[in-house]
Amino acid sequence: MKAINGQEAYEKLQKLLIDKKDKLRIMERQVDIEVQMAYFEKGTKIKLDLPDLEHVLTKAEDLFDEDVDLEAKRTLLNQLASFEEVKCYRILEKYMKQPDKQLVDWSYLAYQESLMGIESSLTDEDMVYISSGLGGKANKLRYFVVMMTDDKLRAFSQQEQSFILKEIKYQFDKFDAEFEEHNFYNAYFMFSCLIPIDISIGELFHGFIQQINEFGALLSDNFLITNVKRMSVDEVEDFIEKRLEDGGIDDEEQTD
Image (tube, rainbow, N blue to C red):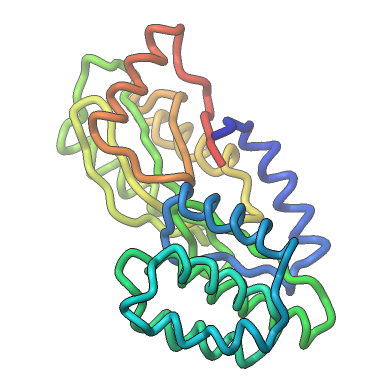
């Protein structure tokens, strides 16, 4: 996965907002990024040699047949999603409510693609679909964040934890961002959040770090933020250790 500068990513997203402000849709469900890549890669190949609509519709019942293998169902889901047809959309909608357990995410992606196609055909304008491994809500993307103390050997005290959480939530409210679940682990803490896509991550995070540190050097200017996946404690500690060995973590490390 390519690491990109946060400012670069948001410049692209802000341009989309200007050009397609009313035509944006953010995928809300959290779907593993590898599943997303596999789905869209398969969909691209299928569209190069797509059967006619009637043939695909006659095969649609295979989705609900327990004896049909999963790969055949994946292909059928991609085929149905490739047509801007209400009949295909309704079939995908029905299957998504009771999919094979191995195809829960695949069926959701097919349903979303079909919905986008229908909306585009009705408005005669292309919709912009923004997806990430952690999903989002309305005009906000979900991020996983790791922040550290100014000294990796010093743990956050209970008083510091309470103060930091209160200040972050206050600053998030000002930007219409949402603070979600969090956990403190000695010298760092992790949390998830929802941030509007037209907000600068750098401005938001460096802003509240500065505010917090006016009352004492509590937070490092270095932090990790990603919308690809939630990292485990072991993954976070390995990441921090490797970055420290390499000479430090960048002020803002983001993957997209």
